[in-house]
Length: 318
Image 1: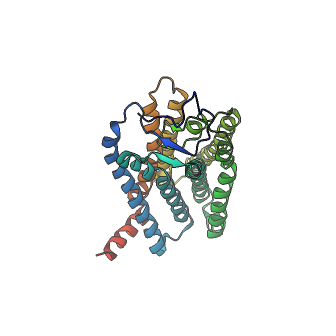
Image 2 (image 1 turned 90 degrees about the horizontal axis):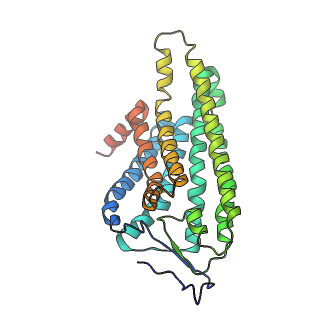
Image 3 (image 1 turned 180 degrees about the horizontal axis):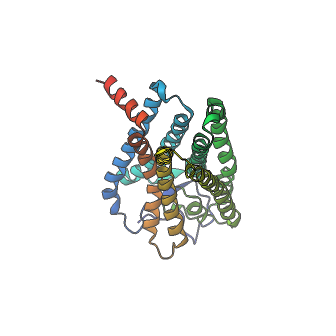
């Protein structure tokens, strides 16, 4: 059992200088068994995204706006994975539970900002598919490299600015006595509960900012595909509708992965009194690992151009 940093009777107001992350507080014996599949998924995510990025960089035929957006998604996945999983594995393997204040709040910022960055990237990709199918003649003039550059800046700046107050508000709270975070990661609410102050403002801001950013992205994605479906149903040529929708298949699968896991995490947190804490912690970890591992594989398997580019890359290595 991990002891609290200060006893409540004597030093309950002593300032806390670091936190202790306790993964699966009720079933710590799980950690050794979970470390193997998590390690394999982590290596898969890093390897698959690295191969995808190298392929897009080396293959001239993939130097197109859609694949640049896919590269941005891979970069976000890599940073998100590196922010969360190595620390989790260090806890599992070496018992390195301590995490400094700056490292904890930096991890919190990256987790809170990169999640809506990914949903925003999906939204821009949905707009790309909308223009490609509904306005094909105007596609080269609308979806340009300059458009991708501006969209990338918008994705990063919008979400960084809107989510930065979350770790800032949490860091300004006064922490005294308790320093044990019952989680594998520095989740905002897990950390805020340890403070001696009222964190209602923190909780409300995270709720409003999170649902505003993610909600607006998913509304625009839904609208894009509503217009796409309406346009496709008007196609007269035989097989044209199927061919048009097939170009959206990989994107829809990625959105399905992302939204399904996000929905499971949200619902289990809403029903946290009925769901064991260890299940919530595991879902939070997997949410930062499964989409990054599956995203490049889906595009690599379903996209002919990427598949050919990977084959050329492997032939170069021989």
